[in-house]
Figure 1: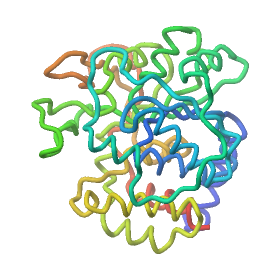
Figure 2: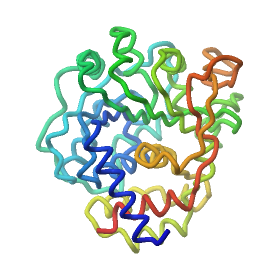
Figure 3: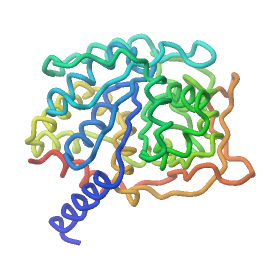
Figure 4: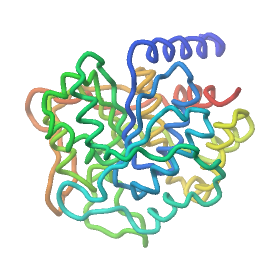
Length: 328
């Protein structure tokens, strides 16, 4: 397939996705979340109904402010932003304080002030109301811990009927976990991925809810490293305002990129939302461990599949699709 035909096919698929179904984004507003959201905002045909902010990398209030500023940059002020609770459903796990400060403050990144404030209703309240409207099925992209979604589904179990699918970035099924990071966070837990670790009960509740799930795990994202060549190529080719924003985000993470520890975590999930073929899916039954020393571990167990799990990814296809969104 020629590059032009490839891009045209992407644009057509995005247009059909946007026309057919609205999207809800649930995010903890880390740097890779913002890259993923920018990718979707770069496609005007993709209809984003709302963005809910969950406790995770950014504190919810700060994350919501940053999302509002990103929407301002994209000219998408009509998209409402809802703030979630400040704690997981169970326990007190959280990301390292320095990571949270960086996610709150976004050093090195320039965004305009937001002209619209976050909505007064809490995220779970909005989700409960939205999911009770089963006349309008929705797809959900979940980029952080699943606290908001679990709380909403607990309060409105029939809401699963309003969800066409949840695409989740999270888990590590056959790959190692990603908690340990030198001096920043030391742990004996070598199996958990961060989004699952921070609120394992919420993750278990969503996986057991019966809703259709695509799980973009570390098994797949580990196949898509963001290295110096990608950064140089992106900086040279990204021309749009959103593209320049993503280039700033990547530049702010240059140290991790040069160390070979930065991956396309949430961006891969966003691309897979529109282009499922970018990952290889396997139907599996996944359970989430709740307690130490394996808190947040995602385990394949016998049973009827409750998720289609991405265990591999086409890195070259991801790069083409992601870059194409920001070239003009």
